[in-house]
Every structure is written in structure tokens, then in C-alpha cells.
Image (cartoon, rainbow, N blue to C red; front, top):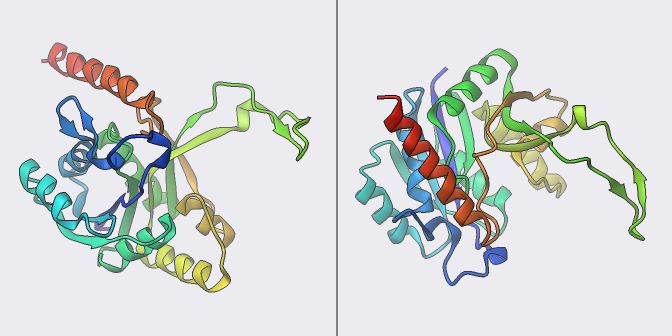
Length: 233
């Protein structure tokens, strides 16, 4: 199966409270977006990348691509009002059999994790990177009282990338648009159609830049990765 990727960088990131959109915030001297693009550039399984950006940021994204020398980026397309709209736009710009969907706000994904998602999807039809939940999770009612405590052994925090057969994911998006169904990730759209999505165990360092506290944590993880790469030589 040949593989392409949709990297979603169209969110506004209001929870960051920053004066700039998340993909362009500096992380160790480079935009957050550059790290995500670099991971897919280094993954030999991925042949092409479609980058989805906020309206009006096409030129800015193109500059990140140019400066990083990211040759796999085949298109930069305008995103929509919601994440689902942006992913749908990206899928339409790809022609590969398989597709990975990744949030640009996860800059520390590793090429071997991308590869693992592809292989799991080839075996099972769909796959998503995830990590085991560390905390005890409570379910609360509308009044704020605990009503249940799920078995932590069964709980996973899902990440990206997530890997699918492109036509199957595209059809799931079309049906969701027709039905007005919303989902917080692409795996949910396949789950609605009865598709089982395999979990690929990921890494806690593949965090999502969501709030201001996440950036210094990402800096520490990045420094650690560089030290490990230097030490292994």
C-alpha cells in the first residue's frame, strides 16, 4: 500500500493564549510545524504530504516548507471551520491508497511511530497511536458527582497519527457531513461505521501543544531526544 499524510495545521489554538497560531510558535528556534513535517519527511513509508492550514496562512506555511526543505509536501490547502472540514479538504488533495492523519500540534512524533501505524493499518484496516492512561479516570454526571470509575487497564489516550484506507476514511467523512455527525478524531468516524481500529502503543513524549505549559515540556523532551541521538552515535 502506498501512503500519504494529511497534516492538519488549521486550528486557532485559543487555549494557548498566545499571540500566534500554534503551528508557528517557536520550539527550540523552529516553528512547531517544522518538527511534524520533518518526522514525515524522514519516514520512508510516506510518499507525499498534504498540509492543511488556516485561511490566509498559505504563504506562511509555504515558507516553513521551503526553509525546511520538505520535499514530500505536494500541496498546501485551505482548512475549514472545524477540524473535520480541514481533514476532508486534505483527503481530497491526496491520491494514495493509505492515509495518515496527524495534528501539526504534535511536533515530537517519531518516524518509527508513523511506520508502525502504517503497518498496523495494513494488517487491520485502521490504526491509531495511543498511550495507556496513567491516572484513575472518573465519570461524572451533569451535577458534578462521580457516577463511575472505569477500569484503567482498558483506557488509552489516543494520539496522532492515525492510519486508514484513504477511500474508506473519505467515505466516512462524507457520511458524517450528510448526517451532521461530529467527531473529535478520525478514528471515531470509522468506529461509527463498524470498523475496528487497532491501537499502536505510542510514547508520552508525543504530546499535543494545547496550553502554554506544554511548550516548555516539549522543549525538555526535545532536548532529551537530541541527547539520546548524540549518545547513540
